[in-house]
Amino acid sequence: MLESLFEKEGYKSYPVVDVESFKNISLKNEDLALIIVNAHVEYATVQDVLKYAQISANLHVPVIYVDSAKEHDSKKLVECFKAGVNDYIKKPFNSQEIIARVKYHSEEFCKLYEYKIRVDKLGNLATIDQLSKTTSKMQMQAVLKHQINYCKRYTTKATVMYLRLLSIDKFIGTFGLPSGEKVISKFAKELKASIRDADMISRWGGADFVILLPNTAVKSAEVISKKLKAKLSNMTIMNGANPELAFGVSELQNDDDPQEVISRVQYALSEAKKQTYGKIAIA
Image (spheres, helix red, strand yellow):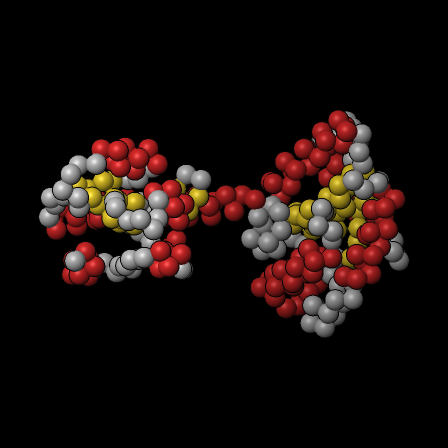
């Protein structure tokens, strides 16, 4: 009856009538705007239904329980609202009442879901660089501050590398900015695949990248930078040409702040660029 009623109102519904159907539900969260449950189903508890409806820690698809029993079950009503059910409809009810409640809860949920998507996107923009899909510059600054404090407290080593794709300006001058951005994106993907799982990489701007190597002394970082340079220099992403790279490397100090670290590795990079071969400098 409900399925037919919703269809007339333009809603698409998915009936679940037994335990196997409930176990085999394969709908995604974005396919749902509302869940309506017979208060007397035996194949799923209130907690089972709400667990399925959960999208995030503070958002779930709204759930309405419909009680068609002649006797009022106050125990069931209390159980539903304590668990987090959004609404509870008791017989007798009419179709207009059902539709009005469905419309209200589904529309409110859609507003909340769209808001969540916007918030998630803003959060993603703040922490992820959209061109390279690496950690954003702002997020890396916070991570560096945390790493400096961590190293000071636990007497551990960490090193920062500043990497520049030197040949990108000439490439952009010849082939244009869109082609240059594609090169940076491909280079960043290969760079991410070449570092260790514990390391963190951020695009600092243009074709400059900062790599944080936790639990790594500067001598080990120098070896890692040489291996990275050897691997990445063999890429043919610049219209068939190999990229030219330079590295600045520096170990974190107890009295550092993020800006001091970056200034130091940028200075090391400027020294590396002067080298005819190698192009790796330590500061």
